[in-house]
Length: 96
Length: 467
Image (cartoon, rainbow over all chains, first blue to last red; front, side, top):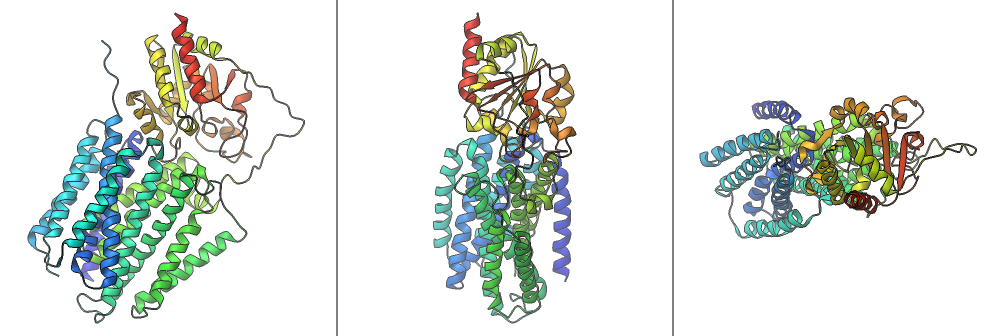
């Protein structure tokens, strides 16, 4: 029960924090925002790594392998494409 | 489970970096720093995880990490910017798959251990595990359907049938009932595959009735689900970093969905169950002939040249015609002549939130020239020319006054208040919502018929020939 309450507190605070922080992101950057939050939530990779590395049953190893591969794709492509997009946002060069 | 201090500290640091990452994304000037913070956080967290004593073998971990990286890099570097919505939907799908797969594995590993003991299941763990699997799998198949629609593999129009909402809701109700039953008695292993299958099916059925115009909302909603499923996984594994990262993603998706819904004046239920854009309710009567004025590139160029302020309204049609680089040339050419050129971006322009900004940024249009709808609307009444390229419904004045119109109440860009309106369009066909745009029949409107890329190119040529 303590565990549940602890986790719920963390979830509650993180959700409010998320709403506050993300509300401030300019609509200009909403697409990079989505790909960045995607990459960050692919941190579920750590759970998949523990599952795969545990080598407990064949099923858990197979599902772990699928999960690690899928999350890694998200982490790698998510961060890279966000950076690729952000690099394109430039201000007007000052007129000489 | 005893988590080593080093790992715990690495998770704490990573969580802080993830929050900073999103904070820095607030402004274009600090945004790239945000990406680096996220990357460093990710590397620290992975390093901390690899040191856990539970990990007995690294062989598979290294292999799958390498495969994932080898697939991820080309996706990120080669994907054209017009296809970013597909990639995003695909990543929601992979995220859902990973979470669902881990949830399934955790269930079968824990169910054989004594109930209520450490390492086994209890009612709480089973409850969140069911939620994790439900959200994970429905996000997986639902996002796959979204990818199919965005990529035009599946029909973008809504697929509907009689009693669809009833079927969908019953399916969800059965899935939830089984989830609740499993929470009470997790030992009924026979029910688990049925539960997973129902979640997978529900994802498909949820998305097929949704039309192309609603894609920005649907992607945002699936983004939220993907985040919440990751958070649920954090509950199951007792990992607070995961709970936070998932909650951040979930709230981001939620905010974006709300913005998209407001931008189309629709509610969540309406998007999910309304099957927008399938019926053309209001057609022009047969005897009703309306006339439009059309113009050639020379005339358009002259009008643009003599204007002092121009607002360009781009829509997804501009991206389809690959006209953004020609538009950039037009921008350059007019700016050089001292014309003040700005771009008005409707929140749902493009196929996902913010998509149009990325497409214009890719064409090297400075981001301080891009204006949001609320920012530009008050200025349109003293704008000389509004030039609409590939946008339709978001400029239709009927949204303001015609209560019978399907888009009534939707906030629009008030182009009809500009002194002159020019619309580049292939033909007189209607937009996503399948309705006529009365803007085209106004006296101050000039229709420029043709392919957006070719037409803008010709205007640019006229401008450079001029003097």
